[in-house]
Length: 257
Ligand code: NAD
Image (cartoon, rainbow, N blue to C red; front, side, top):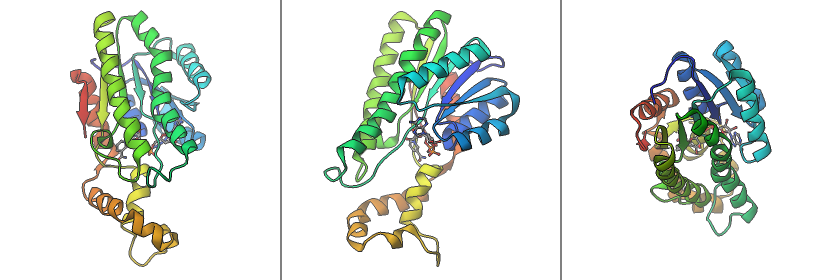
């Protein structure tokens, strides 16, 4: 889909990181943007920074009723929706057998349930309009392995599959609606910093890693090595946003950053 001034985008996970960077890039291109996130404070700050072409709608994407309100607010405010960026995501850590089943559920409720809610609520509007684009943020972790983060990796693998099915279905009934699944590598955001700061503590400073018991650090050692390696390969969220929007414009199903 060609991104043009006057179009309307909904971005989830928009308060921080990749979502905030994509929202900023869209506003720069003249689109109006609806920002959705559970972090109301950061969301309000991001909306203020983006000026009068952005509105903030605090939303938990895992809650279908809140996603319905998000769509109602979008249509009431701007009267249309062209781009839906299902980007909100979260993870949890630890060996898969030790992760509490409730934590598995929450990761799936956000990373898959949140995208399902977005697709369920917004796709009919795109189909009525006969055009539009849906972008889902998966992860390279969904294509590789999720050592000590299995719920995250498994949910992102499922999201790649879900996006492929969606693309196939829309090709049959509404071929002008595009679907892109983005599998970012390491991007310098709060989510990744939380991991890399643990793996490569700043010199001299008190660190969270010092607060972890040695037996936990020993268990995490293989993951820490991989994360420290990732820290050397990070790109900025602004660069990731450029890559994602290029993928939308060129109609790519898969993109990595
Ligand atoms: P981030 O922590 O900066 O941003 C994630 C945002 O999602 C936060 O603002 C958070 O409040 C929001 N969020 C979490 N749960 C939510 C919910 N239930 N409803 C609404 N908002 C919610 O992290 P990021 O790196 O910008 O992550 C964005 C997406 O990119 C995520 O899906 C993440 O899995 C994916 N990703 C990130 C990386 C990376 O290296 N940073 C790599 C691969 C994939």
